[in-house]
Image 1 (cartoon, rainbow, N blue to C red):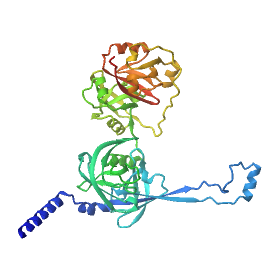
Image 2 (spheres, helix red, strand yellow; image 1 turned 60 degrees about the vertical axis):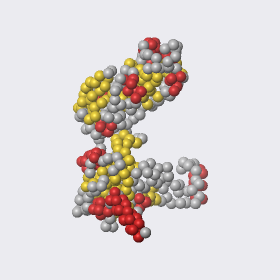
Image 3 (tube, rainbow, N blue to C red; image 1 turned 90 degrees about the horizontal axis):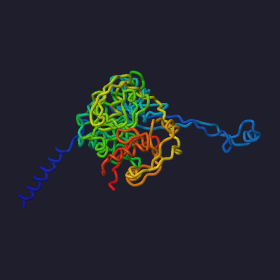
Image 4 (cartoon, helix red, strand yellow; image 1 turned 90 degrees about the vertical axis):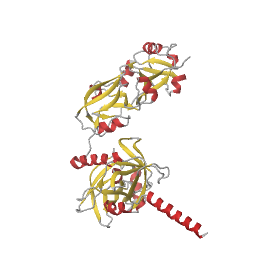
Length: 468
């Protein structure tokens, strides 16, 4: 019996030792790097626009009732209110440069940075970039502990990572997890290949560092996915190399310039790849080209697929905006395209993204020239009409067909009345007769790609021809 108890105890000790060896130990990392993490608190003065006379209607001073309300209504002096918010940041240089999120310091009238040794400093914003959510602060100090920058390109999915920050104002809080995915694109965030983790990130963690197990910063904790406002297992960090590229420009000029080429793009699906004869699901499919833009001047067309830009592979469509944005405006670059079953090279001069891009508003597209359907167009379930010259001018197109009705295969592909079909595959459309003639030569059951403008959006829609 004693022997059995001894064996069980020995096995338990062995199992616990093995488990302890398998689990990571973050203590040394936190001790060495924690001092470089700071608390960032902001104060914003909100000007009270409340009327001096509550209940007084908005009357002009010349109105006879204005004097009545002025004399007899109870007066209330307008006053300003202060709102405060908390975030995190980290020191990137011994002389007081600090990195945080742009949204942490947005509209702040006063910024206070508190170190782990409880010292507080007033901070000024050197520059902020809302598109990447990166802000650079400066405090008047020297000899500060600073972080060590890592390379997020070497991160592996499943690798342990650590966050340090001030969630809900609790300074120097440490949470850990793993890398869930890399290169994530989020809605309205085209310039950042986010690192997705399951590290617990909550309000107040924003702007804090994400460490790898070497104690190197690989990202800035920026966003969470949440339905409740708290942590739900989906956290997103800005790769540190992306942030430091922004920092270089902010330190030099206080702002960030980005390249643009004037195209609309979409992802290559299997159906679209089949339509365009691509063997791999790589590249960015061009769905729209801005007239007079850099791509248009270089001869790039809708239906082209960009495979390389300035020597960099475009593995997925969301790679292209980041690569182009990171290219200096005015640079002449080489672009590798896939067009009509073969690759070709073109060169273009990169333009610059404007601060306030204007979006053209599309009007009503009704009132097209009457046109009749035929047996061929019914293979897609479409009733089409040719655009008037006024509509072409309004849409800034040379041709295209208006969808009068969509049913069958077209309805299943979510085409709708008032959509405009600009092209079928590589071929720009000029008339219903041309469209029908093209369809007559396409075998039954074959997929075709229609370039469709729906409102302000233009994209290729793959449709399988009805086999009846």
